[in-house]
Length: 277
Ligand code: C2E
Ligand code: MG
Ligand code: MG
Ligand code: MG
Image 1 (tube, helix red, strand yellow):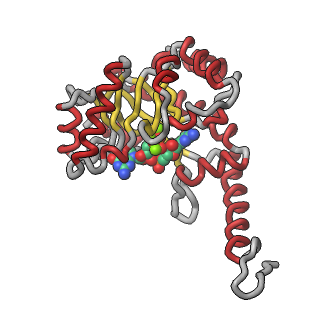
Image 2 (tube, helix red, strand yellow):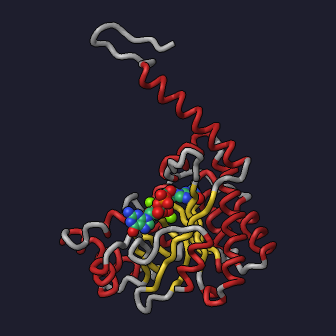
Image 3 (cartoon, protein in one colour):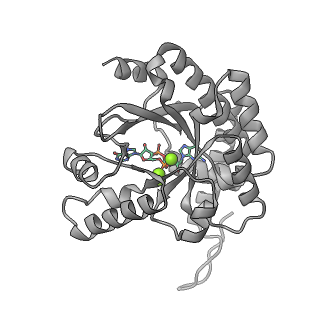
């Protein structure tokens, strides 16, 4: 039973907090069940070249369709999975499914031969067994290592979690690409950026959203692009929604973009017809 403190007091067990805790427990149980019954799905979002518009990559994003028709965003269920220990299970599911769907796509669309298939990793997945797991899954699917890109957020990259550097180096030596997700929102140590086997930076959506109206953001994006060039890193802008944003990025030498302007993340079937179109 919820206990409330006296007037004006606060309580650790207010009915609100209690209800929220119950809901969390229910959510975790639902998520575990969804995983066990293979009910999660992947949505793929194309990445394009700003030079010629060609599809240069596809990012896999986890989706949790629900019976009540109210989808829960990965921004909510991924942290839940991380806190509840389900993330390793979920992460393996994402890796297996992304690699198997990538294989299907490559078989039907030879034009994707040089495209890269990207998936997101949580910091807790970066243990010593990950590199071998990835290469084993790729080999089993008959895919070359360099068709896979793993995205790790800037903040996950720059923790002092033990062993992360070794894991990332092993991933790099295996020929798998590494992208820094949500770049610009964390606190990168430029010296460390140079030491890790990073191939590209993904400029966070928050820098792109107001490009049209905010001269400060335009300056910032130019500076980030110049920095990437100096470090010899590839760049992709996230969350590109308008032609004006794309034009600004192209004019300033940003090689790649991803966003609703081109396509929303979508399951395999609609993606195939988008590719056809
Ligand atoms: P993210 O990796 O930075 O993915 C980009 C997010 O921006 C996606 O949200 C995508 O749907 C959304 N997005 C793409 N283009 C646009 C646009 O033009 N406008 C706007 N407003 N949004 C756009 P989503 O799918 O909800 O995923 C949210 C975050 O959840 C991801 O951010 C990623 O950090 C995490 N996530 C998703 N799937 C996985 C996964 O399989 N594993 C892990 N560890 N994290 C995942
Ligand atoms: Mg990502
Ligand atoms: Mg991102
Ligand atoms: Mg993000």
